[in-house]
Length: 511
Ligand SMILES: [Zn+2]
Image 1: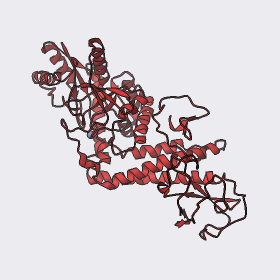
Image 2: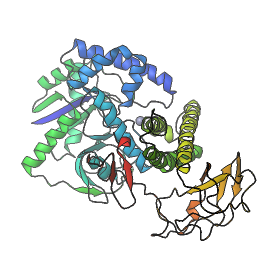
Image 3: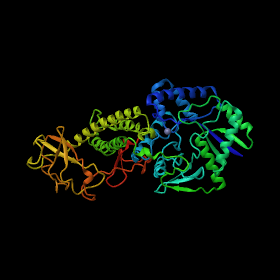
Image 4: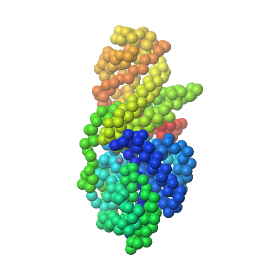
């Protein structure tokens, strides 16, 4: 006896061969229809919303009155959501973006109901090796994906370089292997689903098989439940079940345990293209997108977050609430904007021109928020520096940095540094200046040409830190954390937690 798990779902590319707003109108049509089916047909048990919670936000922006009914179905387990916020390209965004993606997915899911604890990545163009590690950091022990696997069983272990591993529910025949099943032709539906089961059975370690009844932007057929019931009755030695991905995973886990099945293990990244192409040309398509994304991720991860966190610490007792002492929700919004550019068809540059024009505006907005928050944070920190040491020295300073100014240089790198750049640049008065060599000044003690005012601080960001020597144990830097380390641990002290030497994280960024 074998079990065919039929999963009703859609794969939702937010923007691709149509711009976002046009696809969203299709989404409204799809969700309206799906809610109607759920209401009228109790035999239509489940619908999976593609593993990404942003579709809930997209839909509810247009249909805010449907929030309660959506929440009700999600809480009953009839609509399956999460765990991601969006479905990104795995290679073209930075590691921190994957963490934020899962964090935001969790945040949204908590407003509605349980999230699916399966790393569902149906369409990404290959996968980085650390995904099992990241998923485990969020308590997720199963992955499900399509592209990048060379061949083999529908079930295997996928292991990250650090040894973390997840059970793989491999979408061997794709996330739409059942999409062409004709629900309005019962006999044909039954014969076709039996053939699909035969194909999968040859490469499965268990007798539970996955029929993904949906594909790109596909709406659920109205007579799905009737077709499933008919096939279940007609096919011999076969159960046809309207199921969910978690139910399928629970079934294969039980079989594996009961039959003591030894599954193979695949270690590291998944970039094989034997069974499905990887579209590697997208790695360099519209290169400006990759460059701007990298700049924005660097801005948020290396400037906005650490320095706004430090600034919020020193102003924690200030009232009223300001951007400086309460930056978290603002920073989170910047990340959300940036992540809207991370879906695989967006950041890969493989959409129509209009899509990428709209991405420019999102990048612009991320930079606007990020630069302003950084500027205010740096100014706030600079204002805390004691500037009453020694006589004023202005010999080397540009004229716009008058003798009542203090210059504070921030080390934005994740390491300590012994020597600053030979001629660091500063930006002030709308211009960029070269400071004189500061050799010997970075001892942790103030120098005249670093501090020369009692009243005013000028925040300066050193732009060329990558030329600094990679030496440890001298100039304190801040450490950017691999945040999946202890990513689900809640214990912290006074809103802070230390994860490594020279490493701090703000709890507020994690909730
Ligand atoms: Zn897609």
